Image (cartoon, rainbow, N blue to C red):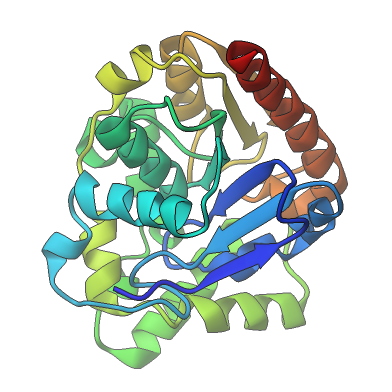
Length: 273
């Protein structure tokens, strides 16, 4: 596996790793690049996505170990000390995978954006119904080989991530990089059924859980379940966002993330003193 990783900011600055969601890539976080003035940003393309390698076998995606090992490999290769792991949507599951396999001793904390601590059939019933009954969210044609149907479904899926219609240029740009993810990868990722609650309940590091008020992909019960499970959790709701508050309310998002990260990094430094 070769992973494409963007590395921005001072090498000796506190580290935030930004992990994108299903079918997306590191370009999702273009509006967070401003944080590189004060933080080192590590932004990978996940396996199967963007410019990273794309094995097509399902067992490269349908369990915790491959995802967790990728995060650990990035941390080891770049000698990252106590990074804050942020995961958007499916990226939050990758963060959960890392904590499940390696624990939280080598990270400063986690942030889940429009994500959850259960997936698939193990989601809260209200959330599962919302994700299943909206055809643009379910986006089943994104997993098909019919290119026209796949492309149409992908464009609708991208748009449903946002609370208001995207400008045409942004929609085209995002649909383009979403199309880099093969249908086999999408299928293996979207059909996971995971329950991370036991792992989440034992976390010792702080957790930030945030979502948009107009969410369609990760309804509030998913965030509320996470808040109720993490021992040291903070919730933030973005009133003018859908599934992508880091894009729709980028200035506030960056300010809130930096503040949470500072608290998490300070706790690590205090524990080491």
